[in-house]
Amino acid sequence: MKFVAVTRILDEADIVEAFTRHTALFAGHHIFMDNGSNDGTLDILRSLQNEGLPITVFQNKSVHYNEREFNTFLYKEAVDSHQADWVVFLDADEFLDDRHLGMSFHQYFDALAQSDRMVHCVKAPMVNYQYTRQDNKNEIIVPRRMIRRHAPSDTCKVIVSAKIRHDDVLIDNGSHYVFCRGSEVREQITEPNLWLAHFSERSPFQLIVKFVRGWAKVLAAGEVAVKAGASSHYRGPFHILKDNPDALLKSEWFMTHKNEHPDLVEDQMRYHGGDLKYTPRIDDDMIAVRSLMGYLTDLAEQHGRLIDASAAVKQLVEQWGSRHDKIM
Image (cartoon, rainbow, N blue to C red):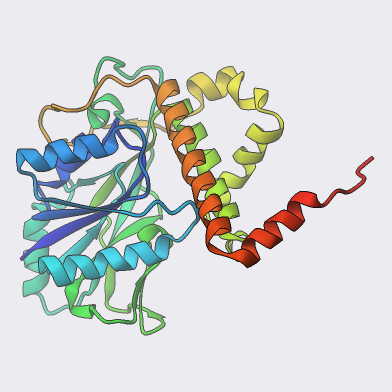
């Protein structure tokens, strides 16, 4: 039985090597879709590929929100080009954790195949780990540094069978749901003991990049994406940084101990990736600047290409540029 992991990635240089090495224990191949990384992520992936890890990397420097399209492409690529039996959807900050299954990840799916149940989608709950002031700052491997977590959440990611490969299959935003011919796949189960250890918040500067770039991508996708509520959790922090940045950047709470909740459980996940070879010691603030400058460059260049490619767009932009309103 062949498992192929698929990952959309953008500026994850601090975690991508550990993530890729760990995931290689579970998946026979790993396909990445890079969305325009500027922080060294691609250099690390190239080094891992040269080392011999089974990696394929695509790139699309989309500056707006179109996650569903890329998720579905990655699923079809895994099945069609790599003969996947199951496609595992993971972000680069999500680590498979099978400690609580009572068997290994592969044994679980073998048992599922031998059972009488028809299952085309397995959902794994996300377990959110948080950075705290108690973390060992000298530990470069994120799952060994961040060892405090919340209880498993109700949010799940999907592992999808190749048996529903069809032109009308759709992997929804966030890889939380699977649709086939317009309806959510019925033959699915949630496996509460197969966790995704989720390390989404690793520093305040990394969060700032997520806020700014996340909501900017929605705005760049137009009013339809805004009204649909895409990435709406970034909207509030984005406007705080735009209108009152002191509220976050000079906040002792946000910059030091935002995540230190009393319900956190100390529970280090079992990391299988071994030592790192290509991950540098990272200054979070400098990486944040590189990431945002890279996104700004991509956004400006795509805007320029639109003007160059379409006389109608150029005329419309010139109209916008010449307009003036009395505002006070």
